[in-house]
Length: 392
Ligand code: SAM
Ligand code: SF4
Ligand code: SF4
Image (cartoon, rainbow, N blue to C red; front, top):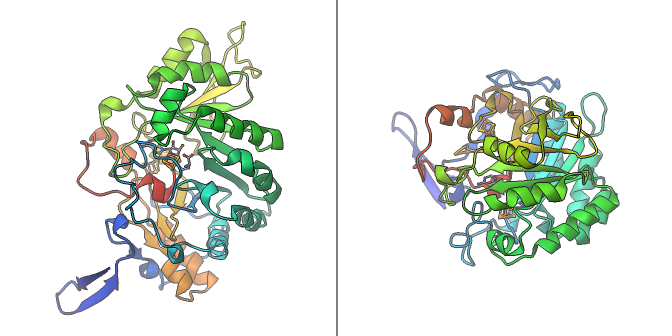
């Protein structure tokens, strides 16, 4: 697929390959970030709004064995859907090379995601390579992974052995019928619980469990989920259903505000608010109170991620690397920056690091914050990248 682009004055025309239709907006060839004074990695990179880059999410596949309606609705992601061809994916060596430049700029935490990351063959090899990287002050990286849990029971030990520290498992309810309907491939709750138990047994913790709450679909699962994970040592986090991507038919009336989730749980199991555990923490923390009204650590805590009702863009320190090497500066971005073109175009490590630095320095994205002042309409006309492509 190709596009003809005229220059500003209409004097000349160049033909450039469109990397993929799903990018909707044209991917910026990161070459526009090359040249000029190099941006040297000092570990102290910050963007146009003063936000550091400490967190990198790497999507390792755009495929998934689930069809959650809020992410990969079956009608769109059907047997005819054109997933990325294998040659378009960054290889493990390419991912590690580019991750090294991010780390030199200050990244301390890497999360592997997708699609379903456990579908990527030999993922342990990538984890081993990433685990060998060191932060600017010589510390090991915090390496974690988000999974739907379906393959976790089988893979937990190998992941742990490779150097993975923790996992986040997505689970949208405990009622088998509700859960099978939500994943839309008839996968049973028991399979995910088995995965969580296996991860826990091999020490991939502390485990976080993510539940996307969709009003009218699984909101009745909030209390059963809270009861189940209270006192388990795992942190259950409730995520507001987001208007990410362009295929899930998002509607504001299906969003259950986190404040209501907290109120509901508090009415049965009293909660007290806890302070954030780290800068840039997206989840608001609430601890279960003991008989004395204070937080009882043995009962644990929950988190609520209010991406829709309470924007946290001001602290957003996340860079996202898509499966095919596009750097995205926001979950709601309409285009990425093509690092793969640089990697495969023989750019030196210095040039790659400089391009990443310059792209981040120019970042001013704050979609959720702007949305709060101007709510989006259903089915926004600007086509955003899909969650399954960019990772959560
Ligand atoms: N397949 C893995 C999983 O489900 O955990 C990793 C990728 S998935 C895209 C990452 C996270 O994004 C999951 O926790 C999922 O529930 C969440 N997610 C996907 N679509 C969402 C949406 N529209 N709103 C809120 N969260 C969403
Ligand atoms: Fe797959 Fe995760 Fe998206 Fe569900 S949320 S469809 S498991 S990528
Ligand atoms: Fe970060 Fe974009 Fe989400 Fe704001 S909307 S928190 S900038 S990813």
